[in-house]
Image (tube, rainbow over all chains, first blue to last red; front, side, top):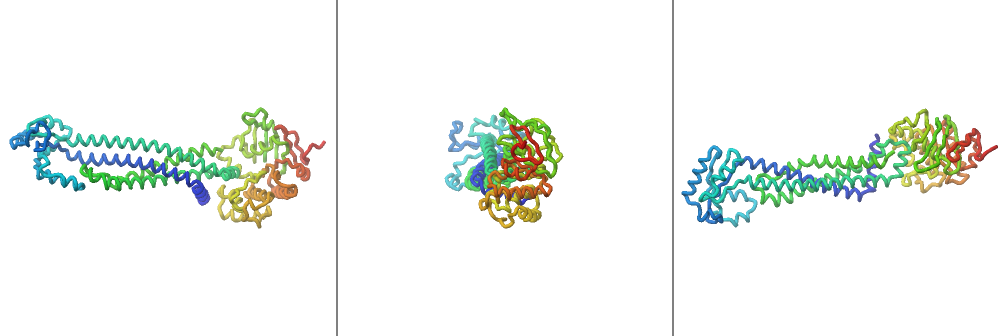
Length: 303
Length: 229
């Protein structure tokens, strides 16, 4: 196997078909980026689940002066607060621990949660925040036990289970992931076809050379290999560009914009997650470009 | 070396066979002219020897091998033993004489060290040693054909097939080419040449096989182009 010959033929082919190679790279890059997004969303959901299901808490929000709930004509009185506490204690052992959060502490927690959004913190005063009981459950699925015992009780504004909210968030994220996968799959199909066409065009433009090669007795592998490699080079370049685009998304979108708003909900995807997508992106792009080129060459450069 | 056993070839969508029940044998070292009008089957004959086509009926043997039984991955190996020369030379226009000959050797995996040795020898044989770095466009027809012959002969094939090699050349140049083919034949290479060129055939007096309408109508050992009664 004379590598120098194969690589010199490959170089000639790449030079001749720069424009086609460009479109192959762009389309492959886009499909790999979409794939990367899908994988990142998957990792994100994993992070959030991991962070939050460890919290296992329910918040019982008490009426405050600003409550709009008809059950809250006034702020919760001390009697009502004690009542709620007793009710909660009666629910043990389903309820694992009970923690009272007064306004001062609520404000501290608020400032901590939204530390990346200073404007929000500035516009919120301590007495705008309600007091609450933070309840840790033995089994997060037993949320309804607390809810049915305390909803509508005098002094109780609402019983919040962040899990319900998070499940909605997860549902949205999963939809996003599905959309990203569908987009990726569609563009991958387009990339496969385009790579096939590009390889065909390349082989057709070298008809004289391949004709002589066949006549003189070059093996099929020798004849097809440079074109096969052309296809794979295009796929690989596309993977690299796609990965770079994905990294750019991570920096621009996640690090700068989303972290301010969603940082509260546990860790966002980190660089380790971005690099997690790399073997998938590389592997799939090599696979599709290799297969597309190989199949096209078999059909086209048939003996 | 080449044996056709009752070979018939019908191309799809054609009524008349391109070759019709042809049986012949070419021995090692022979020089054979294949003559006949256009469409008589000469090119088909050559294509069958290269296994570019398969016979519809009958068997083709080359170098003792039954081509019908030869698996397709062994076909390149067969073709390496056969050199071919065409009427239109079939050179790569953007490569020099040396690169054109080298291409044929590189493509079958010969190492550069061998190639560097073979090329001067073979260019010398065809008389183009001083034009090694010219492009085909800078050469005359006769010189281009010599390059093609150099390329065909560089791998020391056992058979040389020539499909109308003097078709695009004037009579004087043609003589030069024929002398070259003769010299190659004398090194032991079996030569089969399809041709229209009656002058050449008549002057060389070698074995003549005449085809008409796909049938072999004459096989004469020291023949001339037309019928001799």
